[in-house]
Amino acid sequence: MKIAFDFDGTITAHPQRMNLLAQMLQLAGTHVVVLTAAAGELPADQRPAEVAKRLLRYGFTCPHELACVEGHAKGEWCKANQVDVIIDDDAGYLERIRRDSPQTLRLKVEKMKPREPYGLAGLVHSPTVSQPRRFHERCIAPLPVHQDQSYRLIEEPEHQQ
Ligand SMILES: [Mg+2]
Image (cartoon, rainbow, N blue to C red):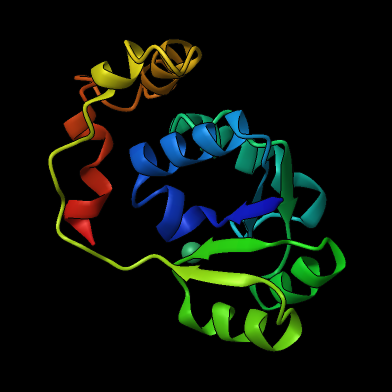
């Protein structure tokens, strides 16, 4: 199973939930890819390093693979790399993915009102999941842009859309 996460508008809009989802999928043996057109303002060879930095800012430290492509090329990439599921917020890109990689299940991220952040404490103490504490620490640590590194602030991009 291979699942691709978009970055802008997907991970950036719902960092906590996307991180948790990716983490759980990885624990279940899923190959997690970040498939993004982010950092398109940079030369192609500089994008992965820049996107990796941006991912860290959102605490998304766990992908197995990072693929920087033009947005319109996401479908071709999904087909060539046999992506089973893609999570993306861009309806136009998803339509192209439908056309270019019809075997890929497309899950669209909708803009939504912010909600109370997930109770990570419950996961940290879950007897069935052993890694979330480390994830929890990683999730908090790479967010120096916020003086108060609370989960509410991590979710702040949702307020601004
Ligand atoms: Mg996007």
